Amino acid sequence: MISIANALMAEITTAAEAAYPDECCGLLSGFGEADKTLTITGVHTSDNVTDGTARDRFEVDPKIRFDVMRELEGGPERIVGHYHSHPDHPAQPSEYDLKMAFEPDLLWFIVAVDEGRATETTAHRVDADATAFHEIPITTDLKDPS
Image (cartoon, rainbow, N blue to C red; front, side, top):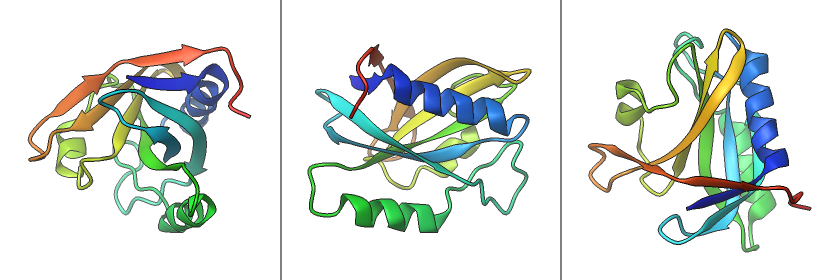
């Protein structure tokens, strides 16, 4: 199960709506394990630096990733996943997402954005041999992570 504060979920959906009709992207930090409870404590927005079309592809800026890794170094939190949006498509991993799933330990948060409005967010993890994604339930609460 994934636990995330409403305020952090709102950051993700706001970024997804702002990027429409392109895909947004960013990193998620937190602690715990997805097979028990993984708590998201940070949302780190990135420019979409894809070489392809940003309408159906995303790439997190490597500088953001290194900055977040340095920020979290030595503490209990780590990068636990990333998020991106699917403009005018469901919040389900695409074939391209599966092709790009190089790190099986990372979560994939996907936000469906229909006509500029976020409609659904799902969380997924790729299996060990990178042949399929498995959805993981998300719970939200009213507490601010600070």
